[in-house]
Length: 286
Image (cartoon, rainbow, N blue to C red; front, side, top):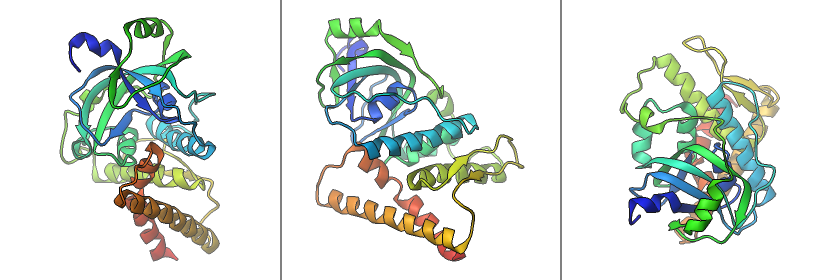
């Protein structure tokens, strides 16, 4: 960024459905392989690639779990009715940009935000809050990395913004604490289990995970759907995880060969360790 005044026009291009999910305040952690010292308002632009229906379904399912972690409810958030491409779709406030390693060290980060970070396979995170969506997306082409909107476009688009914060957060507030969590061992274990379930089960489509509505040591994860714990159900679950792992391993091979992965593929890479962990746990049962 050259001058402070440029910050009112800074823009970042994302693939759909992630661009609109960010403008709707559901996606708050945006991963990149490059770092930046940028903070402040950031316009969100949707790239030209049409999203695949399975990608839309995958990310809507994932952010449903994130929303339920955040609100301690079984409610489904409001999703965009359409995912426009080659369009300006909204604006967020970038609190800061941190490395994935530093983000993981913030012990007071809400479980929903931590789950977003864990599912992200990038090296650096743009931490975004105070989302606003455009009532009427503005058709235009985008650019790579951080780029600038024309002054007339930014001024005109700003008039059509509407606040959209289903999961309000102030990242800097939660970044004050680093190191071991201040929660009790039981509370910490429950929170970790909920995060793991949100990441793993949102990929399988076999269960609906909702945080317990009560808090403290008596809280337990609530799992609905998924069909019980019979041997047949457990074997079905194992096959599902094994299939996901094969897909992730295929993506790892592509990455090693230097092929570029899109945002949805990078997100799937971030689930590798969690899938292995769950598969190992199932192996001890079956």
